[in-house]
Image (cartoon, rainbow, N blue to C red; front, side):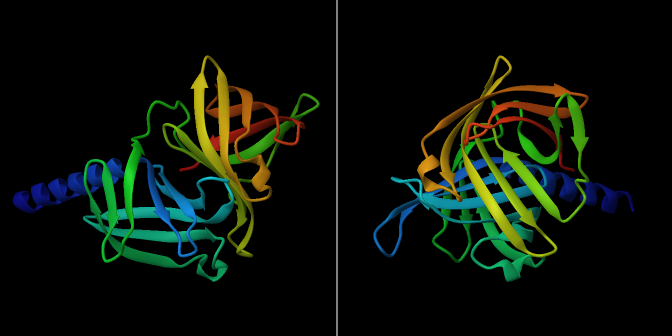
Length: 236
């Protein structure tokens, strides 16, 4: 019995360590069938992941999908929460085998090979967050983060992506992503793609940020120039 317990502990430790190795951001640059050079970015937090593809030169948005994930040995399981190419997949659990090296992630039986960008550092906001409210006229207005309509932001050490979607209706509302830094209370985004307006690719946005009672307070101006004060909480 003691030997079985030790073996189970070692197996759990291996699975946990292997999963932790995925946390961070990964990229794949390749040429499409019509000759366009594309970039795909995968971001893994501890429990959630996204993948987005866009044209490397113009930032034109192509596609995105994501949801929760789990890894057992080399078998990846994902439960889809949004998919811009096929919303009928929302709610489905998909499984596939991966091969994980130190700085390379491969999908077995495919030509998909991703190179590591970061391992969750140095960004101070690494993880998956849910929009939980706003501050208007000095008053905090909170929302239920357990409802099907979600706005999630997922960050690695250097990359970010936000996604607005509804798991009940399977509707996708929009997404954007790129690189970010957190220095001296300033959160700065450099946008690589924006599904609602490709012309936003290349712009930079600066915000003040602070973590107060485990809430990420995010203040500044939107890409439209509108003032905002958002509140985000870590997604379990």
